[in-house]
Image (cartoon, rainbow, N blue to C red; front, side, top):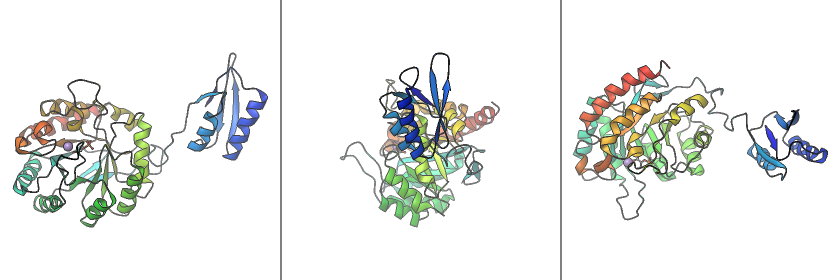
Length: 344
Ligand code: PEP
Ligand code: MN
């Protein structure tokens, strides 16, 4: 819907608008009210170029879009019945828990294996472990390719599917060749559209999942959904949306918790939502309650950094990883809340 700056467009302004619309194969229908007129776009209004051309006109205040700018991710799309499988769970539907280290320590394989068995015992559906890490400081530990073998050994020995973050083409390729079950695109990479396309291209026609974190700099939920559309448009519909907190505004939390956007995501898209409370609140003692909140908002699962000995961990683990014992309680309680939330 086009909203003009003034109550009504002049004849020449309307003609200019019609000409632009014609170039994009749509028509303009004026709706004359008592005080003001507004102008409907009849046809496919998803073209951003069309919107930019019209919004660029000095006499137009704004456009309120009725059609979503994404096609494949929309609830009405042909993919609306698609389900993403994690272990024995189908999402949406089941409630899935992804747990494990923030960072795998390549020099302490035994520690990761211990955590892997413990999260399995606690009831997790997927094991996570960072091989390569996006770190704010170039002087911090950046991860180590040797950790990929540790992750694969943990999969082999526990039977759990595994998730790890990839930040470039080579890392995607290594993980696809190793048939890593789920590739994480982290918050810092979620705005790297070429990387989103590459992960979609390279995982097309596989069963590999893409777990897409929400960038801390994303605003409207449509921006997040459009990032996922980049992956799906390349032929991989096995996408999981993962809110993980946005730029901090609340002193005390690492980021601004955003689990509540689950409601909006579920209204607009068919894709499963797995919330990451660990990076959102950023402190182990806050994590259990944040997990319960995520389940209450109707999430299809949670991602919880978990470590058998958090104090000895790398990266985020010493501050935000919960122990497997705490994880077991979180899993029990969030599954119950998930059941309750589905009734609303
Ligand atoms: C992580 O999962 O350890 C991580 C770095 O996540 P994010 O991209 O959300 O910061
Ligand atoms: Mn982390």
